Length: 96
Image (cartoon, rainbow, N blue to C red):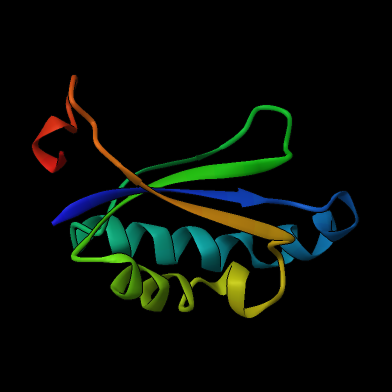
């Protein structure tokens, strides 16, 4: 498995929509943590987006997982960026 950093970008005008769907989004994230797919997740302090670290076989598998996120299904994400990531030092180094 490989590690991927996924950055979500949030539009300020969608804040109410995100608030509405946040419980489902967080429940989905928790289920992905339990499955070993999400390694870490959290919003940026300024509310502009979030960073999620995933474990996946490849980018296509990851995209399939991301499509299941309630935030994605409900149009809460203005943009995203997927980057293969090599965590060489620290708690996640086994995913390099």
